[in-house]
Amino acid sequence: MANTPQARKRIRQIERRTAVNRSRMNRLRTFMRKVEAAIASGDSSAAKAALREAQPELMRGVNHGLVHKNTASRRISRLSARIKSL
Image 1 (cartoon, rainbow, N blue to C red):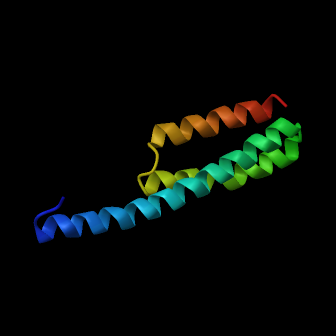
Image 2: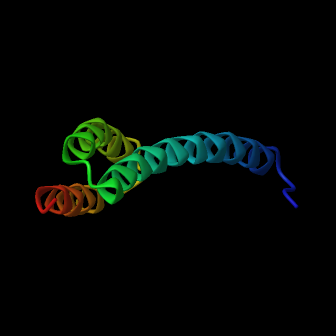
């Protein structure tokens, strides 16, 4: 257990930050799931639209430190390749 006031404060800060990050990650995953669902349905135009909405969300996740820049770029690249092959 935290013994110092500073350690107690850090615990409070971490709890708040974790809640924010969890919310942002859930939002990011939701956008990714929408793209996956559109690809699975085989609807090319819906998949393109979903990817167009998901790209800024992924990059926002990069800016907030949720995912690495290369990870976001790789995900976008793989999704766009799958959409292109529809």
